[in-house]
Length: 113
Image 1 (cartoon, rainbow, N blue to C red):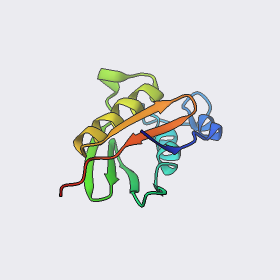
Image 2: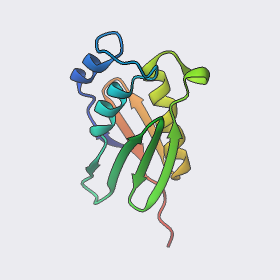
Image 3: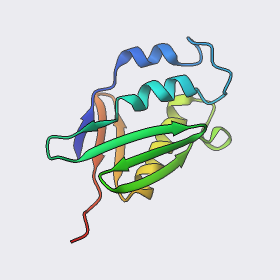
Image 4: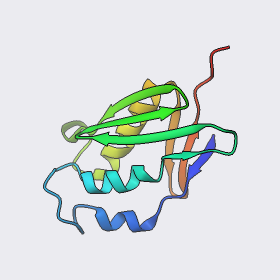
């Protein structure tokens, strides 16, 4: 697994307990968190993550995946909902993503030969 990014502790300020958020899924926290994921890795892998409503879109090079922030299944904890949505989007793209204490790790999809 490749370390994608460090988790910025300032994103916790956007959690619903600390920031006015009427969405129920913590969209301000999610937007601040996924902004860190858009990067280009040392090996040339391009990673991009966007949010539209409750949908997260993850792109690793040309592979695309989508995940949903599901409050009824994984809520009400915003961090748990985000973790499952990112894992769903990564699996849809053929990749694997892990959120650990020290950062976000990515196993890119295997490129077709």
